[in-house]
Length: 344
Image (cartoon, rainbow, N blue to C red):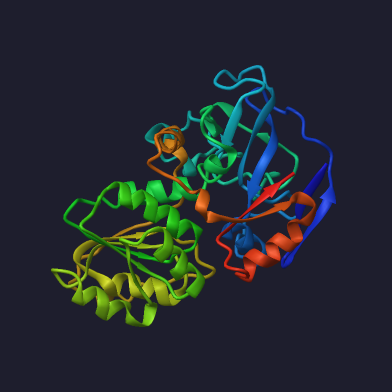
């Protein structure tokens, strides 16, 4: 089968690999019907993910059909349409039982697919812990609607939940890339008083303006003054940092009012510094982490009910054979791209 493979830093290639087989009793083999490219794939390409293993098939955003299951799999069966969680988790260790599934202590736990074991930019994938890592797609939900459930949409949902947003809040989201927009959709479910999104890319600004006209938009160089002028208590009540650069990390805490929550959703290419003397007295609460995939079933229900729709994010579709072109488009933000769907 064809598989898009991490060769070395800066180099991915489409290669031929053997179709995966069941290795453990909790495995499932899933035939990929649609996959996508994530910014985290680019982090691997750039050498920013130290755990990534050369030779693995990349990709962790995917949906498909269960082809085969191990003897211990009970929740899914052959023929089921499923989303694939970016995280694999055993469900039995201390962290899994606490709901912190991205900290699963099993050797295949956490972000394994497309990082430490073969992922989904291919034709078939082996999914460890299938009972916890696969979620059935309702019959009325399309592959396109479900594509982002296991990663960027789960990330936005997790970030929104831990940010403790109320109806009285002014919420600032920094970054209107795919994860930023998924976060926006989840924040909108909380119906805060005001949502401001900060973005510099003109195509993304237009996308937000066209699809979510009630959301206020500001560019980074104007953001601090704008937020201060449009909030009641000297800054945003909640800030979600989704962009992942040194300047946006700084902007996040500067735009937050005293005693507010700053949720770090982004994955950074390098370490960030908390300038505590400059922040003294703001009494900020920082919440950090990664996607928590515990609530994929709930997200699928919201999609089924028409409360979340991420299909506008799919701006381009490529066959697997042309995935190199798709990466070039996505990495260089060409042609107004937001997300790219890949079809084997």
